[in-house]
Length: 181
Image 1 (cartoon, rainbow, N blue to C red):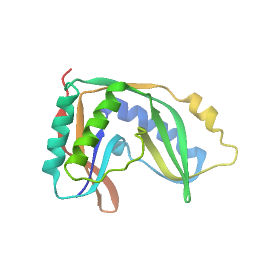
Image 2 (cartoon, rainbow, N blue to C red):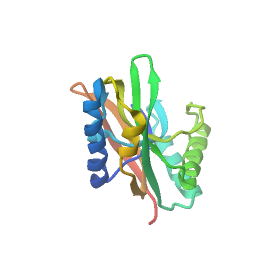
Image 3 (cartoon, rainbow, N blue to C red):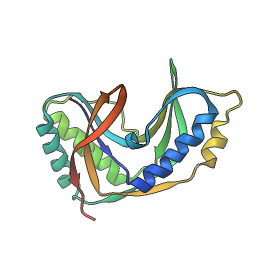
C-alpha cells in the first residue's frame, strides 16, 4: 500500500477550496487539477509499505505526545513550485506551532519504526494542481490577493491510502486518530 498521513477537511471547507481550483483552471493552458475529495495537507509521506500497524501506533503516540489536543490551521495565499513539466500550484498553511510539533513528533516516531521519510524541512501546503502551464499574462500576486483565507479546526489526523482506481487517483482514509476538542 502507498500511504501518507494527513489533515483532511470537512465538506464546507472542501467545497470552498475546490472553488479556488475552479477559479485557477481558466488561468491555465493545461494542468492536472486536484479532485475535491483529494484535497488535504500532508503530514508525512510514507510510501509503499504493508506495515500500517506501525504507522497507526506512531500516529497515536505523536497525538499523545502533543497533548491529544485539537488546533486550528489557516490556509492562505497562493504559490507555485516550478518543475520540468510545469508548475505545482498550492495554497500555503500559516505557521501554527501545534501543527509543526505534531508533524515532527509523528516524523520522529515513524523514523524510529524504520520508515524512511523526506529529510527536507516541513513546508505544509495544499496542492491545487500539478503540471500547470499558465496562460500568458497570468499574475500570480494578483491571483493570490484575490483568494479568501480559510480556517479549519483540526480534530483528527488521518492515515491515507493512495491508489489508482479506474485510472483515477484516489485517496482513502483507512485510519484516524481523534484529537480532543
